[in-house]
Image (tube, rainbow, N blue to C red; front, side, top):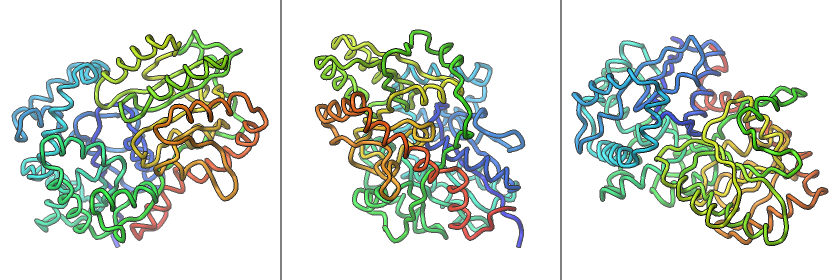
Length: 434
């Protein structure tokens, strides 16, 4: 039997979305195990996430979807944007929400109607590269792969992975094509030779309830994180360089993740104001990029200003500073409002010995315990008062905090990149190494 050749179709804005991080970790681990791996980028690249030796190509640019129908000329014109550094391209997207809305709405339309030009290109690449296993980052890309497979000229199959699909469904709803969109996803699941992957058990239930996906055709496989080396002290110098105003004598409460509206950062601001009235001291820190522009971040800045709640805002920080901030934080709060499918920030924080506070709904709740061992607390979803009450416990109850901290690394070890990769290969019926 010929060795498998993996190709990831990676849709990204250039930000560090959890789905892209998950898939690039999987790609890197497959490459390290001796498999042949390629990355086909859509919209933007994230070369810094990919190990050297993995071939990468640009499948299409965001300019392709700036009109109501996919445009090959605009896609080609997108090559000219590479004269600008990625940081500048990323800043443009962050500052022009209308560009993102138009792009994603038109992409949702293309998912419903097909994109012959993109499908032709994808077919040529699959044949030329000898791809046997196509792994699109998001389920929404799979209808394009299904169309190529149905032509029967390229000998491959594709794996449908659901990780945040409901966010893209919002754009299909915006153009009045939600049911068409769901039907295309269901068709893509049925057209694959493998059951689809969902990133948690709760997400399987949600996909079945909201999108009508056959639950018997879904398998839960958790995302994987890179566990820090045991005993390695955090680089506090890197943290001080990135966040010079951070103090060490006041507990740090940190939000990590995308600064987009579904993440509920405003709930954390209201909770902080409630605790200020109880004379509970803390330093709030919010770190992360955005996939959909800066409007929500700007609104949260205004809310913080009106509430007179001090908060340190930072978009990107280095890996060294992030690891140090995980360790230095009293807790990590992830106040998502949209039944989070998983949330890799949770096991990442726990891998550094830090308890977490999360809503009591969604697949994210599956990340904070193993058996009887708990490594975090939950609050009632959308309930700012309960968020404040549970955060107060983490800030003031040292015995509780110590018990949770004791379990964090053990629980986090259940979500390693190695385990995720083993589970994916087993699901595909492949050996653990090339």
